[in-house]
Amino acid sequence: MERKVEPIKECGQTIMAIHDVMDLLNGKWKVSIIACLCFEKMRYSDLLREVRGISGKMLARDLKELEMNQLITRTVLNTQPVTVEYEITEYGSTLKNLTNTIAEWGLTHRKRITNRTV
Image 1 (cartoon, rainbow, N blue to C red):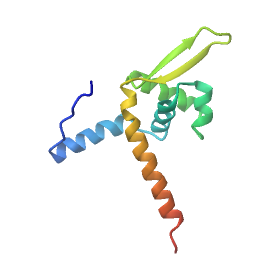
Image 2: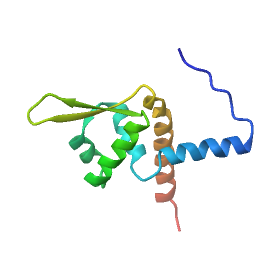
Image 3: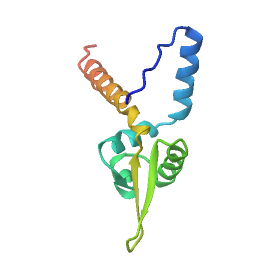
Image 4: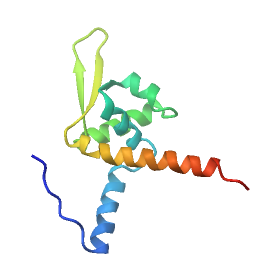
């Protein structure tokens, strides 16, 4: 059952809500990690390959923070060697529309900027 969210009616509430989201998703990589996991569960090495430019140390730190905030789950599989999979939670999947909106805006912006004549 989808929960109905009341619209924010005051500028102060809007700004506070935006700050909460920005604090949660701060940094360069968390939105990219979430976007990848919205498509499929992935192993650490898969995420390291897909999120181009992220270091292993940064990926590990961001994954821990996302797990702590209940946006992803970490599952250790009984394999040799040990395999760890990350998966978006139901709560984390509520960010899928946000990541799609950001991606669409980014594509439009890239086209606008690269097609600009000087």
